[in-house]
Structure formats: structure tokens, C-alpha cells
Image (tube, rainbow, N blue to C red; front, side, top):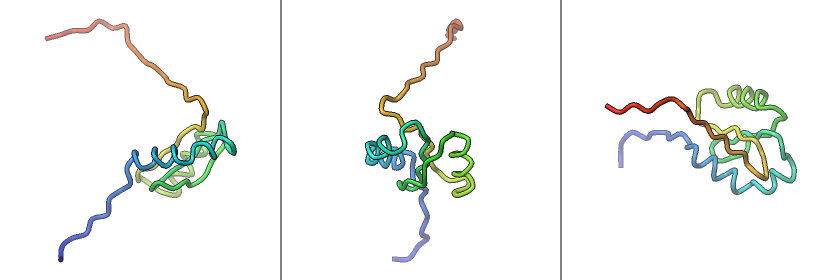
Length: 88
């Protein structure tokens, strides 16, 4: 069947699923560091977020990739505002 083939960028979900698949090994070997995952594959681990993101942009450019801190207990940041809510 003819037609145009389109390349589909890997989604953030694919990268998060890859992190979950490898989480235990990542924790054992690299806890506290930052992992870069692109296309569902681990590209490497770095000591700082800055180094990880810089490497990811150098390797992959402006494509979808994940930079995530490797933690056994993940921190959840909650942001809220005490500004009044206005309704129209």
C-alpha cells in the first residue's frame, strides 16, 4: 500500500515506562543521579541535572526525552497559590 510514512517521536509515556522497567537496577547503581531516557532506552546517568540535560540536548536535539532523578522515594512538589479565585 503506497503513501507517506511518518516518523513518530517517542512519547514521554514510553520513556516513563522504560524508567519503571529499569528502576530497581537504576536505584542500585545510580541512586541520587539523573538518568536520560530517549526512545524508551537509557542513554546514560549523570551526577547533576545540568550535565544530564546538556548531554541530552547534544545527543538528541529538540526531540522527546526524559531527564529524571533516580530516587527510591520520589519527592512530590506541591505548588499552590493563596491568590483569591475570581469567577465570571
